[in-house]
Each structure stands twice: as structure tokens, then as C-alpha cells.
Length: 237
Image (cartoon, rainbow, N blue to C red; front, side, top):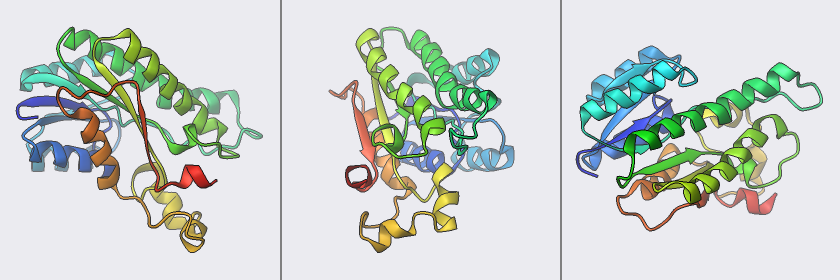
């Protein structure tokens, strides 16, 4: 990974930090993208000496700036879009705006970023890792607003892996003590999973980062695949 540049759109949260740190340890150069929590992103950028771009990747100009920063930093090689929206509104009360907001954040934004990344790397060896969710792999009642766009992302990844020359894979995290699931874990919503020994422990950012780094390894022989990192939860529900 030494000298290779990986764009982490939405990469300043707990999971993004774990991935960025793992990349730096391997000699790679992360480019951090941030939409809202600018102070947290700036602290991470300074600590890792990584380029930072602030803005929403739904905007073409922001996607262009991320790729420009990456190409200025070295050999553009990887993309991990870590953007998303928890979309916790149940379908029974969801409005059209709720559904469209989830689709834009959880599907449209990462797919547009992926399209522009693929065009930028051309025929070179490169790796794209989408972040989905266990709810797009297993069937969880009440998850439609969030899971449907994430499931679409999984299917799109398989199409793009067949259509493009670059490797395209998906990591589907489960109940992890980071990111969008952290609030639910802290609220006690999932305590029964531990009490009933459905999972052995809460997932940590490093668990998901390890899976992402596996797919990012240069000359990896895997494409079009989904790796679920949930302690086996989706198998038992």
C-alpha cells in the first residue's frame, strides 16, 4: 500500500478514523472527506497529515476536489465512501421526503463518487469498497427506509464489478460500537443480543476496518463480493 492514495469520503468518524490510521500504518495516504463535523475532521487531518476536503459529495464540485487532492497527493488507488444517513423512520410513517433523503445519502452519493473515481483511475489497478449494512444482507423488520438503499448499493457493486475493470466489493457492518449504530448501542436497544449470546461482543471500528483493508490490498483476487462483519447476527435473526 506504500504511496497509494485512498479517498475516504465521509471518513472522519469512528470507522473512518480506524481505516485512515490503518492506511497510514501501511504507508498509504488517506484523503479525508467531511460534510458536517469539520472540527473532528480537521483534528484527524492534522494528526495523520492527510489532505482534507469539506463538502457534500452529492455536489460534483466536492467530488472533483476530493479526486484532485488525491491525485496531487500521489497515486490514486482506492475509494471507500463512508457517507450515509441512519434513516430510522419506519415505513408506516415515512414521507416521500424521508425515503428520498435516505436514497440520496445511502445510495446516490456513494454511487456518484464511485463513478467519478472509476473514470479518474482508468485502466490502472484500483479498489473500490462500498459500505452497506447487515440489514441489506439479512431481513430485519422495520428497516426498509434504511436497508433498501443499502441493498441497492450491494447489487450495484456486483454490476460495477462486472462492468468495470477495477475491483468493487462491499463490507456490510453489523451492530458496531461506532458510526450510525453507536447511538443505538448506547441506548441499550441491542443489549439482548449480548444477554442471549446471539453475538459474542459489540463490534468495534477495527473489526470493520480490517475487512475494508482486506479488499484494499493491491492486486487482490476478489471482486463483486460482500463481506458481512456482524458477529454472525444476520445468520441468527
